[in-house]
Length: 395
Image (spheres, rainbow, N blue to C red):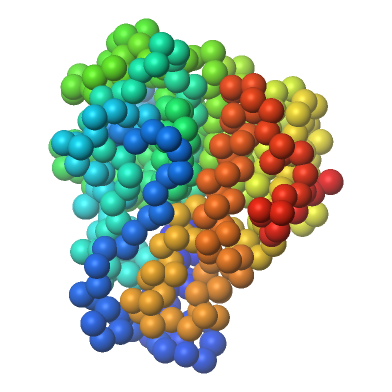
């Protein structure tokens, strides 16, 4: 299941006819005055620290890239998010690089929104906040035909609470922009098979780069300047991983293969691989389920049986596959621009209240990593909470 397929089917097709046959306005373009609306916005993080961010251009010289040509190797864009200080003179980072954002919107049938790209809470290049202790690290893997900014709400929330989070743009299955101006877009599977195992290999390579940063070495391909304090600030003894959809499957795959990942979180990962995921896992793993529940998805049920350590599976009632991400904050705003009906919006993001959805994805991943990377007891993970009535703990 790719993000491009989901949005393309729901949005691009709707440019000619009402969405999914539901009575309401055709999705031919923004309503009158809609294109002049201000930027889309993301809710800010709730942690005590401002957030900094920096991009890295990484080249894995152990993995030749036949698609790029002879003598070329697997290259990735990654972004580090971290608690920062003295941020005022550092600009806010966009949700996606402009060129990648335009390509992403064009594929989704939302090209009219190109001038409305949201800003994040991340200040580009701001100094790292140092406290004498190194920062726990979480690496993030996006879904099929998605992009590394797709879960910025979650990522910047963790950073504002003292984590370094590294998001990965999986080449040939993502929208991103390289420092030389090249725009990367997803290729079809026949031209560039990018499987969960390939994503997992990317994650493990990024962990190697985290180790370089921790040791005081710059892994950027052309040694671009890093924010003050980043070198030597990361704690390689406290590293976790999370991912959405195919990235959730990749998180499980990487964790089974690499003991450096001390805790893993899947956001509605199908857990479908060929060959299937194998081996028992004794480190903590959490699943936030929506479409790919254990009751309906045998691969997820099989993986659950392989979890021999701490494990948890929760589901938010009314959540769709794309609910655990920035979609819940952005699509209600897009709906206003395009004049969608409530039913049209719900057909995209589900019936889970968007405000509640944002709070869920800020609170539960933070509680999980706090408990298992920082060893802080989190009551939120013990059972249902009055603060989050939509969240069900699956047995």
